[in-house]
Amino acid sequence: MNSKSIIFAGAHIDDYKWLGQQVNSDDTLVCADSGLAHAHAIGVTPDIIIGDFDSVDPALLSSYEGRSKIVSDDDQNTTDLMKALSQCNLSNPVHIYGAVGERADHDFSNYLILMNMERPDNVAIITKTETRRVIKNSFTFNGNIGDYVGLFPLSPLQDLSVEGVKYDPSVLGGPYDFGWNGACNEMITNMAHISFTSGCLLITHSLQMRY
Image (cartoon, rainbow, N blue to C red; front, side, top):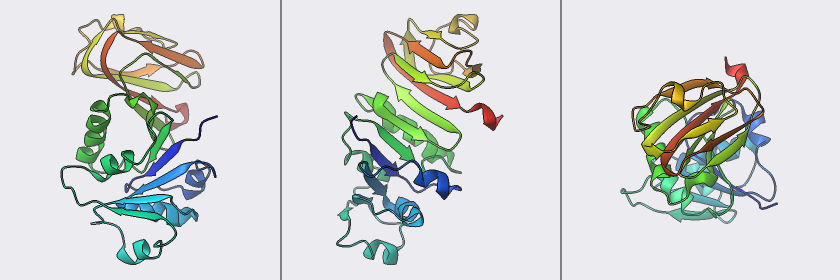
């Protein structure tokens, strides 16, 4: 199995026991600026710390000198998440934690970052109760009966079809363009398959226990 890259961004994470369980010894851990605080809280040493360092605790950052690769990048035309992604092997899975928070502009910016990637399908934004992905190709994912799935076109989708959920997109009808609202669909099997021939789609997969 190919190892994955993990990115810790700076948004609040309230369950460090859970977060620690997401990191394996063979993963590449990249901390985006103040995301370093999450690594410190769970007692793991990141492979790479990158950002413009406008939000990380300077004393904390200094304590990792000689232990982690520290990359200072003050390019204000790129976000810390973009900088962190540049350090990852995008051919393998990339899991991002600490990217969902109280700032809606940050959340939506993250979707646009993934949308502008050539192949964002391997990248997942993960919280304890939800996974969010931006995909440009047909995609299959596992879940549980009763989980909720949201489908939100970011650019026009052609030939959209979905298997394993309660409502087929044809119930609402097209066109499947930005503004089409596929919220609150429900998984009826343990696997969902989404297919389309062109376009870009945001998927939200929420665990049943959240509701």
